[in-house]
Image 1: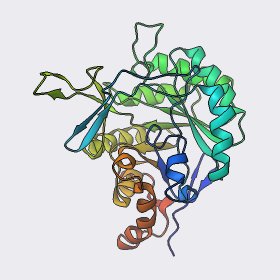
Image 2: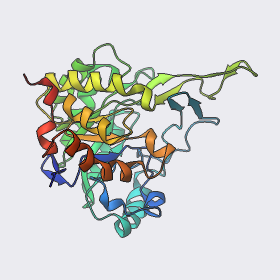
Image 3: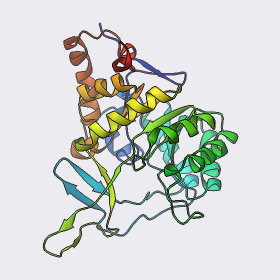
Length: 305
């Protein structure tokens, strides 16, 4: 009998599979399709201080081995999430959930995290620092170690639950950002967020996305994600959640060998709404094929020997 359990900052997950933020809403649509309690947990839609309508459309573009999105963090705002989404979620999801938080200033992050930290259902906070800092010319917090550390410290000062900083891959040196977050008190690192991409429509000769560029995700980015997870695992002592292009049980194990304790699945949910359920169901078969008894033993396995 294989053991798929992993422990993420003191909380035991039945398996390492976590639908990624922005691809699973607040769980409701997927709970109508299958019992989502089979998941390790899920990371809910990126939540901000105020409600956000998101970016102008079109904001999705298809690619050969992935997709581009510029949804722009559309969400009802943290108060509405606490008042409506979390109580509703309690009806169909009975495990701790991962709260994904975005912000446009350090105060935004601290405010939203402080509120979500008080919610019993929330097991971890996942802080997306790929957002533009409105007080710094719109540069993303996640491209500068100092800014990343500042957000980390501000969130840690107002929370008790484990804080995972979600890093942008659109940087020269991912390791310096991860280390800055660790030094500022982060409990873990989530990576990678989407790469920056674009498509151009041959008929109009203009970019497909209204915002011109968007976040590129899907199976094409898996090798980049694996490389960054591998590098960060070598550099920090805190756990890593790996994501980027994962769409099979094999990919999950490969990500764990690179150093991930748990693995998020994003774009695959948009292609096949049963993706996470199917990956979880397939894990025991793949583990037996590769003579793996215990998934926890795989974490960072590619670094040994």
